[in-house]
Amino acid sequence: MSQEIYVPCPSCNALNKFPNSRLTEEPKCGRCDQPLLLDHPIELTEANFNTQVYKGSLPIIVDFWASWCQPCIMMAPIFHTTAAQFRGRVRFGKLSTEQAPMIAQQQAIRSIPTLALYAGGEEIVRMAGAVQQSTLIDWIETHLPK
Figure (cartoon, rainbow, N blue to C red):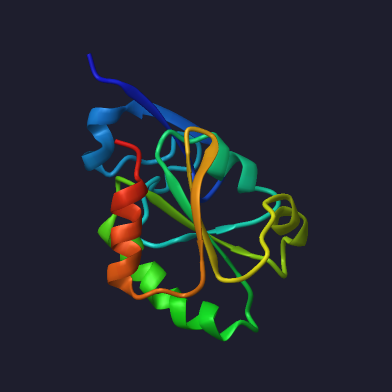
C-alpha cells in the first residue's frame, strides 16, 4: 500500500491528498485542476503562508527576500533554477518581507536573503546570505529529511 501525502495547491491553496507513488504523474489540484508540483518557486503571502509551509507533506524551502536587496536579486535566478532540479522532492517558495512584514517578524528574519527549510510542520534549518547554486544544492541535500 502506498503512503499518502498532502500537497497544498500553489494556485488555490487547497490541500490535496494522493498516494506518494503518484508524485511522478504530474498531479493536479482536485479543486482548480492546476499542477501541484511546479518547477519554479511559488509566491508566498500572508494569506497562503501557513498552509503552504506547515500543511504539506513535502519539505519546502522559503526564500525571504526584498525587492531593494541586491543579494536577493542576485540569488533569485539560482533559487529558480534549483527549484526545477528538486521538483517532486522539495517545494520552493518566495516571501517578500516588504509585502508580508508580519510573517517575516514571526519567523524572526533578521537579514535577507534568508533561506529556511521546513518539513513536517517545523523549521529544520536556515541559512542567511546569497550563495552559489552548488552551495545551495549541497545545503539542501545535507538537510533534507531522509
